[in-house]
Length: 128
Image (cartoon, rainbow, N blue to C red; front, side):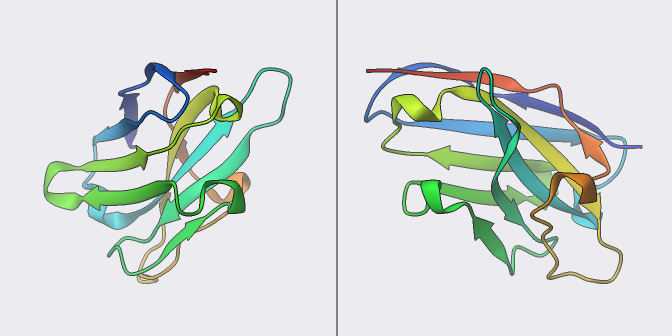
């Protein structure tokens, strides 16, 4: 079992930045590919970014490319999502998720159903 806790959300003006963190406990994070997803009010949860176990692969949704950066520190059991140039449409609850990819160290799933563990989410609100 892996327990995930997100933090770092909040209220920010358009153009501002936030860094989300996802802290893991229960198992070493180095076993898991990690993803960030988000869900805006009235919308389905969607993929934002993913990173492989060894940080060798990263993927981003088109709408965050060039603005968001996913990274991880396995020694700290933490994954980050640096969000720059935030827009009002980035307002959502952001979730981190973990997937044990076994020996596939470069895998980083993009689909929600591929993930095994989820955090409770953290709210990000971007004002115009």
